[in-house]
Image (tube, rainbow, N blue to C red):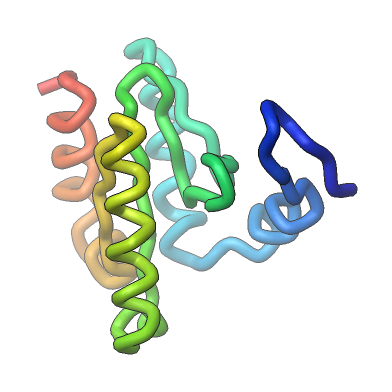
Amino acid sequence: MTKFKKGRLVEKPRRQELRRKQTPAEAMLWPALRALRKSGFVFRRQHTIDWYIADFYCPKGKLVIEVDGGIHNQPDRKAYDQDRDRHMANLGLRVLRFKNEEIEQSLQEVLLKIMEAVGLC
């Protein structure tokens, strides 16, 4: 179902598909982010921000977390990501990007960076 929300196109089926087909790194990070609810920071996954879908978003912390696989190393994708990050910054949001390998090999370090970004450390 495609609908308009606050004048912007929101693709609900695409978000739902991304939730069902999350990467192993996203699946590893999601429970850890959900655990931060106890501290008052709620994260949403595959959340629409304007015409983009953020992997994870924390409204209270104004934080977007992107989990990058190998495709993000391609030149055209790097340019797209830079434009996207610039747009998010213009909205007053901070973007943290982590490679799949970072999450899979150093989840605690990734969580520490996220907690610092929202002011929990």
